[in-house]
Amino acid sequence: MKKVAIIYHSGFGHTELVAQKVKSGFVKSAVELYNVADIIKDETLLEKISQADMIVFGSPTYMGSVSADFKKFMDLTSKVWYNQQWKDKLAAGFTCSGGLNGDKHNTMSTLITFACQNSMVWVSQGIFSDGKLNPLGSWSGLFTKAENTTPDKAFDEANIATAIAFGKRLDDYISKN
Image (cartoon, rainbow, N blue to C red; front, side, top):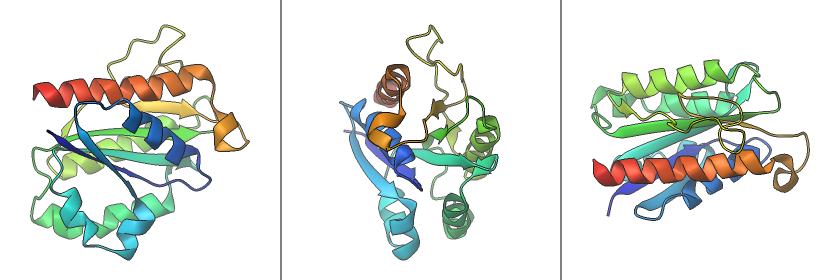
């Protein structure tokens, strides 16, 4: 069975809910969720994460980029980078913000660049935008839009369905590779 690590930061619970929905799309792989706050407190978790076959990164889009906490996690992985511990592992990503765009593309570009600097292989979203899935029309990774309310009420049906479908796509992809 393939191992997947989903690493996320969530300032208000919205990105955490997306991480949980992405995880629910996986049925053929063993998936662990990691909050960056826990990794920052306990760097030994990086060794466990390095055992994963795929690492999925999730950050809210704050001020047009990844959150400061997610960036702190990225900077913490310099030893992982130096030793190329994630080389050739599969990578994917997701982001969440309150706006339709909110410069999510910059957050995704940051996640892609981070994965590439770690010599990882990026897996795109690969979900056609038909109104029911991928309503924000992203191909590079999962984009979600949250309303300014509690996470359980913040997302419409299409955003939740897309998060689950994204997990399923990644699960199908990793199962074949």
